Image 1 (cartoon, rainbow, N blue to C red):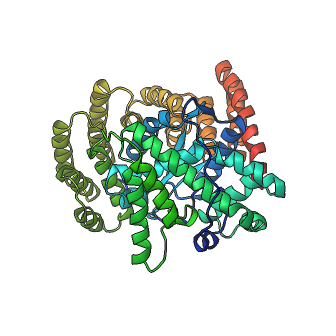
Image 2: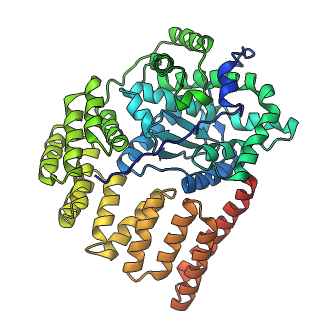
Image 3: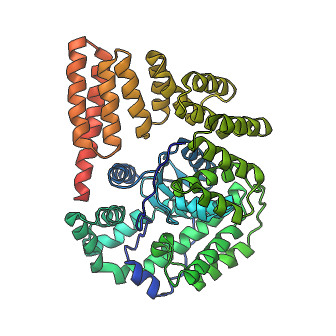
Length: 486
């Protein structure tokens, strides 16, 4: 598999109090009594939150190290979809992003943006602890903490969203950006006023997260155990907390409160240990230790990892080191043992493609999609392989995939190439414009739309012209929203 070196990413979690990490950890203020949370019905996300969140995500992609792993992406998307019905959120299709960082962290941004670090998979040796973190982040979103925090912050006339997201971008590697640093500094005006409110939000997110876990069939005790494991990590590291705890401070009173709630729940933990999760975790371990794969094996062996997940990791390493036949044989054997796990044949197709076995990748991809229609990672591999044999077919495959995944820059990058090689020049420039705006390069995206329009006029492509004009309005809207972060 393609190697991607991970870089350390700073604090990215959603801290609605906007408190500094040191202040959050040093003080243990008791929050007011929790309100009753909504148990029935749904709470629609506002159009403003969606607009701001999507705009933030584009800036984040432009600055942060993104982990492009379609198989892990598909797993995370399916997991969020599984949890979402129990979160009281409605009117939103969450967008998830993977961060190439070994730090233990996850975050949620208004508008349904959820980010997960590769390090979270490495830290959580089972699925339920990882789910507890994602459920907690969904709790922040379902309780509309951004909107409530904004209303409170407006009393002090602080641009909450701008300051909060500037802080996240600063932590994502933008330390030299003076404008962002100034925005982050504006938080100091109301840190003390917001700290207790932050504690309240964290407990609300815990409560909602526990309810989500129970509804989805996970053992809520995993959340409490995860917090205690994080605390032990702090002790072992000499007081240096994982990134997640810097903006989600865990106190003994908060853990006790969560444990009390768990003790009162009647959970039917129907979801046992997940092999699918262990396979994804193997991918994360290899991504983190891409320069020394043996460290991924060693780390996996420390845990109670099932043998089939170890075989999967060895196959990935074989593929990385050029032992393609060994990797494919192992993956095919695993696929026969676990015919319902789509990621196994998808991995084999990807291995074949990256080894230059284009025809084998096409054959494998088409075979799997006949049995498992619509699996995005395999569709992406098939589209990429077809680019080298039949660009017109590649365009049709990737165009359908782009319609289903309109927030995936990787899909649009391949679609632009397929369009360009199949005599769809205007659509190729349009796809490139989409890829540019999705990765935060909005001005370049608008310029690319201009090129697309010119080509469409020259070729008389009326359909392309209509689509270009429609997307131009959306692009300009994103550019105007970006002004909120400056």
